[in-house]
Amino acid sequence: MNYKPRHIHKAIWDHIQKKEYTIITGARQVGKTTLLRELFSEMKEAGYKVYYLTLENIKILQETNKEPENIFRFTDKPANSLDPESKRKDRIFLLIDEIQYMNDPSGFLKYLYDTYLENLKIIATGSSAFYIDSKFKDSLAGRKKIFNLKSLNFLEYLEFNDREDLSEEVKRIKDRQDYISLKQVDIYNYFDNYLIYGGYPAVVLENNPVVKQEKLMELRDSYVKRDVLESGIKNELEFFNLMAVTADQIGSQVNKHELSNTLGIHNATINKYLQTLEKCFHITLIKPFHKNLRKELTRMPKVYFLDTGLRNTLLSRFYPLNDRDDKGALLKNYVFLRLNEIFPNETIKYWRTTNGNEVDFVVSADFKTGQAFEVKYSRKELKNTGYQKFNKQYPGIPVQLITYEPHMESKSILTL
Image 1 (cartoon, rainbow, N blue to C red):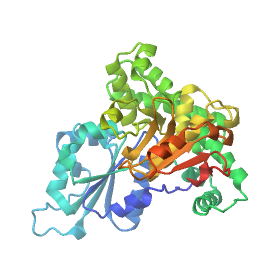
Image 2: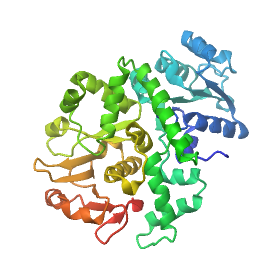
Image 3: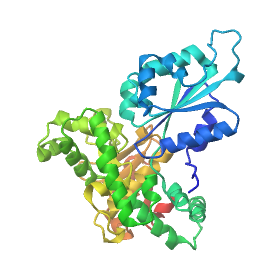
Image 4: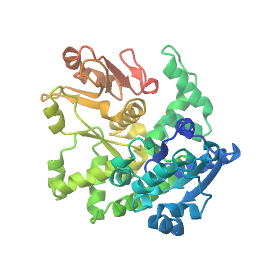
Protein backbone atom coordinates (compact mmCIF):
# COMPACT_ATOMS: atom_id res chain seq x y z
CA MET A 1 0.00 0.00 0.00
CA ASN A 2 1.22 3.50 -0.85
CA TYR A 3 1.92 5.97 1.94
CA LYS A 4 -1.24 7.72 3.07
CA PRO A 5 -0.34 11.25 4.26
CA ARG A 6 -1.43 12.12 7.76
CA HIS A 7 -3.23 15.44 8.16
CA ILE A 8 -0.44 16.75 10.40
CA HIS A 9 2.14 16.05 7.68
CA LYS A 10 1.89 19.46 6.01
CA ALA A 11 2.28 21.38 9.30
CA ILE A 12 5.43 19.38 10.08
CA TRP A 13 6.77 19.86 6.56
CA ASP A 14 6.18 23.61 6.81
CA HIS A 15 8.16 23.63 10.07
CA ILE A 16 11.22 21.98 8.55
CA GLN A 17 12.78 25.30 7.55
CA LYS A 18 12.19 26.86 10.97
CA LYS A 19 15.10 27.31 13.33
CA GLU A 20 13.42 25.43 16.16
CA TYR A 21 13.89 21.69 16.32
CA THR A 22 10.81 19.65 15.38
CA ILE A 23 9.73 17.05 17.96
CA ILE A 24 7.01 14.55 17.01
CA THR A 25 5.39 12.81 19.99
CA GLY A 26 2.51 10.37 20.39
CA ALA A 27 1.54 6.93 21.61
CA ARG A 28 3.40 3.90 20.35
CA GLN A 29 2.25 2.56 16.98
CA VAL A 30 0.40 5.69 15.82
CA GLY A 31 2.76 6.05 12.83
CA LYS A 32 5.61 8.32 13.97
CA THR A 33 8.34 6.20 12.39
CA THR A 34 6.39 5.89 9.11
CA LEU A 35 5.91 9.67 9.04
CA LEU A 36 9.60 10.30 9.76
CA ARG A 37 10.69 7.91 7.00
CA GLU A 38 8.34 9.59 4.53
CA LEU A 39 9.78 13.00 5.48
CA PHE A 40 13.25 11.56 4.91
CA SER A 41 12.28 10.36 1.41
CA GLU A 42 10.66 13.67 0.49
CA MET A 43 13.58 15.71 1.81
CA LYS A 44 16.10 13.56 0.02
CA GLU A 45 14.16 13.90 -3.23
CA ALA A 46 13.98 17.67 -2.71
CA GLY A 47 17.76 17.87 -2.43
CA TYR A 48 18.20 18.36 1.31
CA LYS A 49 21.35 17.05 2.98
CA VAL A 50 19.45 14.70 5.25
CA TYR A 51 20.21 11.65 7.41
CA TYR A 52 17.88 9.17 9.12
CA LEU A 53 18.99 7.60 12.43
CA THR A 54 17.10 5.41 14.88
CA LEU A 55 18.10 5.13 18.51
CA GLU A 56 16.78 1.58 18.52
CA ASN A 57 20.23 0.97 17.00
CA ILE A 58 22.20 0.21 20.17
CA LYS A 59 25.51 1.39 18.71
CA ILE A 60 24.13 4.83 17.86
CA LEU A 61 22.45 5.08 21.26
CA GLN A 62 25.60 4.14 23.16
CA GLU A 63 27.75 6.64 21.28
CA THR A 64 25.33 9.57 21.59
CA ASN A 65 24.83 8.88 25.30
CA LYS A 66 28.57 9.28 25.78
CA GLU A 67 28.88 12.59 23.94
CA PRO A 68 26.48 14.61 21.70
CA GLU A 69 29.23 15.18 19.11
CA ASN A 70 29.36 11.42 18.53
CA ILE A 71 26.18 11.68 16.46
CA PHE A 72 28.44 12.96 13.67
CA ARG A 73 30.36 9.69 13.65
CA PHE A 74 27.37 8.43 11.65
CA THR A 75 26.80 11.50 9.43
CA ASP A 76 28.55 14.50 7.93
CA LYS A 77 29.29 17.27 10.43
CA PRO A 78 27.75 20.76 10.14
CA ALA A 79 29.85 23.90 10.48
CA ASN A 80 30.11 25.33 14.00
CA SER A 81 27.94 28.45 14.41
CA LEU A 82 31.00 30.44 15.51
CA ASP A 83 32.79 29.66 12.26
CA PRO A 84 32.58 32.85 10.13
CA GLU A 85 32.74 30.71 6.98
CA SER A 86 29.58 28.75 7.85
CA LYS A 87 26.56 29.31 5.61
CA ARG A 88 22.96 28.21 5.96
CA LYS A 89 23.01 26.67 2.50
CA ASP A 90 25.22 23.94 3.97
CA ARG A 91 22.59 23.08 6.56
CA ILE A 92 22.41 19.44 7.64
CA PHE A 93 19.14 17.78 8.64
CA LEU A 94 19.13 14.89 11.13
CA LEU A 95 15.99 12.81 11.48
CA ILE A 96 16.22 10.90 14.74
CA ASP A 97 13.69 8.21 15.67
CA GLU A 98 12.91 7.23 19.30
CA ILE A 99 14.88 10.03 20.96
CA GLN A 100 13.32 9.21 24.35
CA TYR A 101 15.76 6.28 24.64
CA MET A 102 18.62 8.70 25.29
CA ASN A 103 19.74 9.31 28.88
CA ASP A 104 19.52 13.07 28.44
CA PRO A 105 17.73 14.04 25.21
CA SER A 106 17.22 17.58 26.51
CA GLY A 107 20.94 18.16 27.05
CA PHE A 108 21.74 16.51 23.72
CA LEU A 109 19.39 18.77 21.75
CA LYS A 110 20.34 21.93 23.65
CA TYR A 111 24.04 21.38 23.02
CA LEU A 112 23.57 20.76 19.30
CA TYR A 113 21.16 23.68 18.90
CA ASP A 114 23.45 26.16 20.64
CA THR A 115 26.61 24.89 18.94
CA TYR A 116 25.35 24.66 15.36
CA LEU A 117 22.34 27.02 15.26
CA GLU A 118 21.14 27.42 11.66
CA ASN A 119 23.63 24.90 10.28
CA LEU A 120 21.83 21.94 11.85
CA LYS A 121 18.13 21.06 12.06
CA ILE A 122 16.88 18.05 14.02
CA ILE A 123 13.50 16.42 13.50
CA ALA A 124 12.97 13.78 16.17
CA THR A 125 10.27 11.41 17.37
CA GLY A 126 9.58 10.39 20.96
CA SER A 127 7.13 7.67 21.94
CA SER A 128 5.55 9.20 24.98
CA ALA A 129 4.99 12.51 26.71
CA PHE A 130 6.01 10.78 29.93
CA TYR A 131 9.60 10.93 28.69
CA ILE A 132 9.20 14.24 26.90
CA ASP A 133 8.05 15.81 30.19
CA SER A 134 10.61 14.18 32.44
CA LYS A 135 13.65 14.53 30.19
CA PHE A 136 12.90 17.63 28.10
CA LYS A 137 13.60 20.43 30.56
CA ASP A 138 12.97 24.18 30.39
CA SER A 139 16.42 24.58 28.86
CA LEU A 140 14.78 23.81 25.51
CA ALA A 141 12.36 26.73 25.69
CA GLY A 142 12.38 28.46 22.31
CA ARG A 143 14.48 25.69 20.78
CA LYS A 144 11.76 23.16 19.94
CA LYS A 145 8.19 22.82 18.74
CA ILE A 146 6.22 19.71 19.66
CA PHE A 147 3.76 18.08 17.25
CA ASN A 148 1.45 15.45 18.70
CA LEU A 149 0.67 12.64 16.26
CA LYS A 150 -2.49 10.80 17.30
CA SER A 151 -4.20 7.68 16.03
CA LEU A 152 -6.20 8.29 12.85
CA ASN A 153 -9.13 10.68 12.98
CA PHE A 154 -12.29 9.65 11.13
CA LEU A 155 -11.37 11.39 7.86
CA GLU A 156 -7.93 9.75 7.91
CA TYR A 157 -9.63 6.45 8.73
CA LEU A 158 -11.71 6.72 5.56
CA GLU A 159 -8.65 7.68 3.51
CA PHE A 160 -6.66 4.71 4.87
CA ASN A 161 -9.57 2.52 3.73
CA ASP A 162 -9.24 4.02 0.24
CA ARG A 163 -12.55 5.83 0.61
CA GLU A 164 -11.45 9.34 -0.20
CA ASP A 165 -14.87 9.79 -1.79
CA LEU A 166 -16.52 9.35 1.63
CA SER A 167 -13.95 11.62 3.24
CA GLU A 168 -14.95 14.35 0.79
CA GLU A 169 -18.63 13.69 1.56
CA VAL A 170 -18.03 14.15 5.29
CA LYS A 171 -16.29 17.45 4.55
CA ARG A 172 -19.34 18.59 2.58
CA ILE A 173 -21.62 17.58 5.45
CA LYS A 174 -19.51 19.68 7.83
CA ASP A 175 -19.40 22.68 5.48
CA ARG A 176 -23.06 22.74 4.36
CA GLN A 177 -25.80 22.51 6.96
CA ASP A 178 -28.45 21.89 4.30
CA TYR A 179 -26.51 19.11 2.53
CA ILE A 180 -28.04 15.61 2.44
CA SER A 181 -25.47 13.01 1.42
CA LEU A 182 -26.57 10.11 -0.78
CA LYS A 183 -23.68 8.11 0.73
CA GLN A 184 -24.82 8.51 4.32
CA VAL A 185 -25.41 4.79 4.90
CA ASP A 186 -21.86 3.95 3.79
CA ILE A 187 -20.42 6.72 5.97
CA TYR A 188 -22.23 5.54 9.09
CA ASN A 189 -21.14 1.94 8.49
CA TYR A 190 -17.52 3.08 8.47
CA PHE A 191 -18.16 5.35 11.45
CA ASP A 192 -19.55 2.45 13.50
CA ASN A 193 -16.46 0.38 12.73
CA TYR A 194 -14.25 3.32 13.62
CA LEU A 195 -15.86 3.57 17.06
CA ILE A 196 -15.36 -0.17 17.60
CA TYR A 197 -11.81 -0.67 16.29
CA GLY A 198 -10.31 2.82 16.61
CA GLY A 199 -7.64 4.50 14.54
CA TYR A 200 -4.31 2.74 15.05
CA PRO A 201 -2.97 2.50 11.45
CA ALA A 202 -1.98 -1.19 11.60
CA VAL A 203 -5.49 -2.05 12.83
CA VAL A 204 -7.24 0.12 10.24
CA LEU A 205 -5.31 -1.47 7.38
CA GLU A 206 -6.60 -4.95 8.30
CA ASN A 207 -9.94 -5.91 6.76
CA ASN A 208 -10.61 -9.05 8.80
CA PRO A 209 -12.33 -8.22 12.13
CA VAL A 210 -10.60 -11.15 13.86
CA VAL A 211 -7.18 -9.89 12.74
CA LYS A 212 -8.13 -6.37 13.83
CA GLN A 213 -8.86 -7.71 17.32
CA GLU A 214 -5.57 -9.62 17.36
CA LYS A 215 -3.66 -6.46 16.40
CA LEU A 216 -5.38 -4.52 19.19
CA MET A 217 -4.61 -7.23 21.73
CA GLU A 218 -0.97 -7.15 20.65
CA LEU A 219 -1.02 -3.39 21.18
CA ARG A 220 -2.45 -3.89 24.67
CA ASP A 221 -0.17 -6.78 25.64
CA SER A 222 3.10 -5.64 24.07
CA TYR A 223 3.23 -1.91 23.47
CA VAL A 224 1.25 -0.70 26.48
CA LYS A 225 3.31 -3.12 28.58
CA ARG A 226 6.44 -1.32 27.39
CA ASP A 227 4.95 1.95 28.66
CA VAL A 228 4.39 0.25 32.02
CA LEU A 229 7.92 -1.12 32.29
CA GLU A 230 9.68 2.01 31.05
CA SER A 231 7.73 4.28 33.40
CA GLY A 232 8.98 2.27 36.40
CA ILE A 233 5.64 0.76 37.44
CA LYS A 234 6.23 -2.38 39.49
CA ASN A 235 2.79 -3.98 39.62
CA GLU A 236 1.70 -4.59 36.04
CA LEU A 237 -1.56 -6.34 37.01
CA GLU A 238 -2.66 -3.41 39.19
CA PHE A 239 -1.99 -1.00 36.36
CA PHE A 240 -3.99 -3.00 33.81
CA ASN A 241 -6.85 -3.43 36.27
CA LEU A 242 -7.02 0.34 36.69
CA MET A 243 -6.82 0.84 32.93
CA ALA A 244 -9.76 -1.54 32.41
CA VAL A 245 -11.85 0.18 35.09
CA THR A 246 -11.24 3.61 33.54
CA ALA A 247 -12.11 2.14 30.12
CA ASP A 248 -15.51 1.21 31.54
CA GLN A 249 -15.98 4.78 32.81
CA ILE A 250 -15.42 6.91 29.69
CA GLY A 251 -17.46 10.09 29.93
CA SER A 252 -17.89 9.61 33.67
CA GLN A 253 -16.29 11.25 36.67
CA VAL A 254 -13.18 9.58 38.05
CA ASN A 255 -13.52 9.10 41.80
CA LYS A 256 -9.97 8.30 42.88
CA HIS A 257 -11.05 7.37 46.41
CA GLU A 258 -13.59 4.91 45.00
CA LEU A 259 -10.98 3.46 42.65
CA SER A 260 -8.63 3.03 45.59
CA ASN A 261 -11.25 1.09 47.54
CA THR A 262 -12.37 -1.02 44.57
CA LEU A 263 -8.89 -2.02 43.45
CA GLY A 264 -7.17 -2.03 46.85
CA ILE A 265 -4.57 0.48 45.66
CA HIS A 266 -3.30 3.52 47.58
CA ASN A 267 -4.49 6.95 46.39
CA ALA A 268 -0.92 7.99 45.57
CA THR A 269 -0.54 4.91 43.33
CA ILE A 270 -3.87 5.66 41.61
CA ASN A 271 -2.57 9.17 40.84
CA LYS A 272 0.70 7.76 39.47
CA TYR A 273 -1.10 5.26 37.22
CA LEU A 274 -3.51 7.89 35.87
CA GLN A 275 -0.62 10.28 35.23
CA THR A 276 1.25 7.57 33.34
CA LEU A 277 -1.83 6.79 31.23
CA GLU A 278 -2.08 10.48 30.35
CA LYS A 279 1.61 10.96 29.63
CA CYS A 280 1.67 7.88 27.41
CA PHE A 281 -1.27 9.23 25.36
CA HIS A 282 -3.86 6.63 26.34
CA ILE A 283 -6.33 8.80 28.28
CA THR A 284 -7.17 12.44 28.94
CA LEU A 285 -8.73 13.72 32.16
CA ILE A 286 -10.86 16.83 31.66
CA LYS A 287 -11.69 19.22 34.49
CA PRO A 288 -15.08 20.65 35.47
CA PHE A 289 -16.15 24.08 34.22
CA HIS A 290 -16.74 26.39 37.19
CA LYS A 291 -16.17 30.06 37.92
CA ASN A 292 -14.77 29.18 41.32
CA LEU A 293 -11.19 28.11 40.53
CA ARG A 294 -10.80 26.21 43.80
CA LYS A 295 -13.89 24.12 43.07
CA GLU A 296 -12.69 23.52 39.53
CA LEU A 297 -9.36 22.18 40.74
CA THR A 298 -10.79 19.97 43.46
CA ARG A 299 -13.84 18.44 41.74
CA MET A 300 -13.46 15.08 40.04
CA PRO A 301 -12.25 14.98 36.42
CA LYS A 302 -13.88 12.96 33.65
CA VAL A 303 -11.94 10.39 31.63
CA TYR A 304 -11.76 9.84 27.87
CA PHE A 305 -9.61 7.44 25.87
CA LEU A 306 -7.51 8.70 22.98
CA ASP A 307 -8.35 5.62 20.92
CA THR A 308 -11.67 3.79 21.21
CA GLY A 309 -10.22 0.58 19.76
CA LEU A 310 -7.73 0.26 22.61
CA ARG A 311 -10.52 1.09 25.06
CA ASN A 312 -12.77 -1.65 23.66
CA THR A 313 -9.89 -4.13 23.75
CA LEU A 314 -9.43 -3.60 27.48
CA LEU A 315 -13.07 -4.63 27.96
CA SER A 316 -13.17 -7.26 25.16
CA ARG A 317 -16.15 -5.48 23.58
CA PHE A 318 -16.21 -5.72 19.81
CA TYR A 319 -19.91 -6.31 19.10
CA PRO A 320 -21.90 -4.00 16.79
CA LEU A 321 -22.72 -0.48 17.90
CA ASN A 322 -26.51 -0.93 17.92
CA ASP A 323 -26.21 -3.90 20.30
CA ARG A 324 -24.10 -2.05 22.87
CA ASP A 325 -25.14 -0.51 26.17
CA ASP A 326 -22.13 1.82 25.96
CA LYS A 327 -22.83 3.31 22.51
CA GLY A 328 -23.69 6.68 24.07
CA ALA A 329 -20.39 6.71 25.95
CA LEU A 330 -18.49 5.84 22.76
CA LEU A 331 -20.23 8.69 20.98
CA LYS A 332 -19.18 11.12 23.71
CA ASN A 333 -15.64 9.81 23.48
CA TYR A 334 -15.66 10.53 19.74
CA VAL A 335 -16.91 14.07 20.33
CA PHE A 336 -14.09 14.61 22.80
CA LEU A 337 -11.54 13.40 20.23
CA ARG A 338 -13.02 15.73 17.62
CA LEU A 339 -13.00 18.72 19.99
CA ASN A 340 -9.42 17.84 20.91
CA GLU A 341 -8.50 18.30 17.24
CA ILE A 342 -10.13 21.72 17.07
CA PHE A 343 -9.43 23.33 20.47
CA PRO A 344 -6.54 23.42 22.96
CA ASN A 345 -6.92 20.53 25.37
CA GLU A 346 -6.92 22.72 28.48
CA THR A 347 -10.00 24.66 27.27
CA ILE A 348 -12.20 21.52 27.02
CA LYS A 349 -14.15 20.94 30.24
CA TYR A 350 -17.50 19.64 31.44
CA TRP A 351 -20.27 21.22 33.55
CA ARG A 352 -22.16 19.50 36.34
CA THR A 353 -24.16 20.77 39.31
CA THR A 354 -24.64 19.09 42.68
CA ASN A 355 -28.23 18.18 41.76
CA GLY A 356 -27.17 16.43 38.55
CA ASN A 357 -27.68 19.01 35.80
CA GLU A 358 -24.95 18.46 33.28
CA VAL A 359 -23.46 19.50 29.94
CA ASP A 360 -20.94 17.10 28.40
CA PHE A 361 -18.42 19.59 27.02
CA VAL A 362 -17.79 23.29 27.53
CA VAL A 363 -15.08 24.99 25.49
CA SER A 364 -14.34 28.39 27.00
CA ALA A 365 -11.36 30.36 28.18
CA ASP A 366 -13.14 33.17 30.07
CA PHE A 367 -16.53 31.89 31.37
CA LYS A 368 -18.27 34.51 29.21
CA THR A 369 -17.97 33.24 25.64
CA GLY A 370 -17.41 29.87 24.04
CA GLN A 371 -19.33 26.84 22.89
CA ALA A 372 -20.95 23.95 24.79
CA PHE A 373 -21.92 20.51 23.48
CA GLU A 374 -24.52 18.08 24.80
CA VAL A 375 -24.19 14.60 23.29
CA LYS A 376 -26.95 11.98 23.17
CA TYR A 377 -27.09 8.85 21.06
CA SER A 378 -30.77 9.21 20.15
CA ARG A 379 -33.40 11.90 19.93
CA LYS A 380 -35.38 10.29 22.80
CA GLU A 381 -32.62 11.13 25.29
CA LEU A 382 -32.66 14.87 24.57
CA LYS A 383 -35.62 15.56 26.88
CA ASN A 384 -33.65 14.20 29.84
CA THR A 385 -30.91 16.80 29.69
CA GLY A 386 -30.39 19.73 32.06
CA TYR A 387 -28.66 21.96 29.50
CA GLN A 388 -31.39 24.62 29.80
CA LYS A 389 -30.10 25.51 33.28
CA PHE A 390 -26.63 25.93 31.83
CA ASN A 391 -28.09 28.35 29.26
CA LYS A 392 -29.53 30.50 32.07
CA GLN A 393 -26.28 30.57 34.03
CA TYR A 394 -23.99 31.12 31.01
CA PRO A 395 -26.06 32.89 28.32
CA GLY A 396 -22.96 33.80 26.31
CA ILE A 397 -22.07 30.13 25.77
CA PRO A 398 -24.63 28.48 23.47
CA VAL A 399 -25.23 24.73 23.73
CA GLN A 400 -25.09 22.65 20.56
CA LEU A 401 -27.04 19.38 20.73
CA ILE A 402 -25.38 16.44 18.99
CA THR A 403 -26.92 13.04 18.26
CA TYR A 404 -25.85 10.04 16.21
CA GLU A 405 -28.09 11.06 13.32
CA PRO A 406 -29.58 14.56 12.77
CA HIS A 407 -32.97 15.61 14.15
CA MET A 408 -34.80 18.94 14.26
CA GLU A 409 -33.44 19.62 17.75
CA SER A 410 -29.91 18.43 17.12
CA LYS A 411 -27.03 18.15 14.68
CA SER A 412 -25.50 14.93 13.38
CA ILE A 413 -22.25 13.64 14.85
CA LEU A 414 -20.79 14.08 11.35
CA THR A 415 -21.27 17.86 11.37
CA LEU A 416 -18.82 18.50 14.20
